[in-house]
Length: 586
Image (cartoon, rainbow, N blue to C red; front, side, top):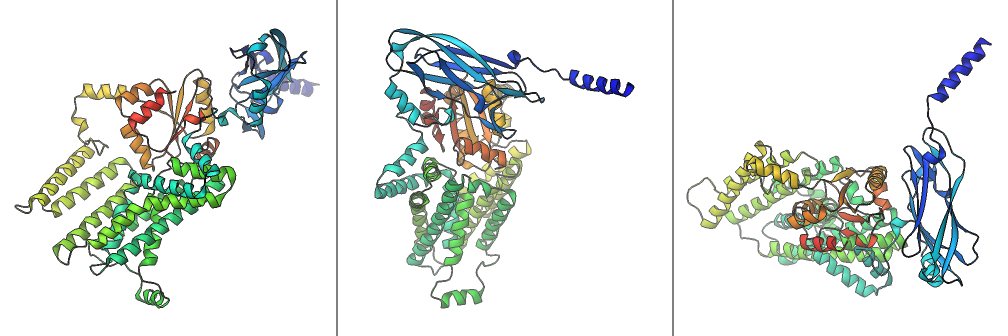
């Protein structure tokens, strides 16, 4: 008997230690009519409470003429192997009318069931609301059926009628356009992408490849080497793009792991030292002889490999044309047409590089000091590319220090500290020396800005004001973190910026667009959230996949009801004036 009483006491104590909420405390349902005679329903969840998505039902009771045409629902998540809502969900119910007119009274039944994270599951619950419906304001049955036929699974996938986002508009063009026009269009997109900062590092690479061939290179060979480089680059983009579209992953992001960056940075350092004349990089003579005997020309294989790999490592971040092609491939599975569009875009992006390569071969200086100088210039540019790649994974102070050392060394080589010399060369050397010395002073003082290395010399008051005016982003890395912020900031406009440390266009967006005074003033009206997908982790991939983002930069906007404004999504770098105009339309 004593043992039984002891056991009963322990069980009673364990149950009493956990206080469960009553059903009406755990779930607070609500529903109201808007001006369009739609029912806005929501269920407020208390802490540690979740709802089963498949248990939520809505019905119109005691009416043969009024019925539900469409229910706009938020997206549920996988929670304990069940589709559920862990934040308070809101629903928009559209009604349809058969033959009634005037005012009609209806009863709206909202049924639901959920559980507590502490281990208690509640029985099915429901609440009935009574509404007076003005049937003359209801949308027609035909429109209701059209809405229903869209088969929209969640509000996050809803697109405003007649309005598409940049990437969706391009995907729609591929789907419905003429193949010839599509390829020409993407060729033009590629030419525009060639003007973005992400492509600039390829200029010293292809130039260095041509210069390294020596003084005997002809214009024809320079052209052929450039074409091989660009074709290999195009093949790399096409393969990576098709795989990304089919499997929903950003392969370029997967190549931003530290060991890959360090490896390729080392390759560019090796190339730079070969340009300085320390050694000659070439295939073994036996292999060259074998390749040549089979009808190929030595050097092309290495150039092709360089083009293929450099495209993946230093290629552009995702822009609207690339994202559009990936969206099309992902939606339709048509890798052939999507791949053709990507290949055409890559060729357009490579045409200026071919021009650079041919120029480097055609205007090669004759043997002498100029030849040594040109090789040294491209060697320094190769080292610059290596440091630029390291920016993604090492501390900003380190890369700034490396830039300053590189600049000082090259300035001294050009004769910055020597007397006399050519006025132009001397001017360039002195300016480079002064700037590089400013970088060195800046990094020693704790600055990390390559544009304003001596900003720390400003009065402290101005610095404090600048800090107050600096826009703060709330950083997230997963869907769960985003859902918490969306729920917390309901009733406010929200801007979500997908960014990564290895994305050059993202940095350009922050330093040029977001830093604009008018843009900052307008952005202050939004809750600013930044999705940091630098690590390319499983959570990062799930977050990107949920919102159809194939890579940064991408900017998404949510309305006051935390509903995604799909057509307002921006992909790639946007100028400050264009971005401000876009914000004013929200």
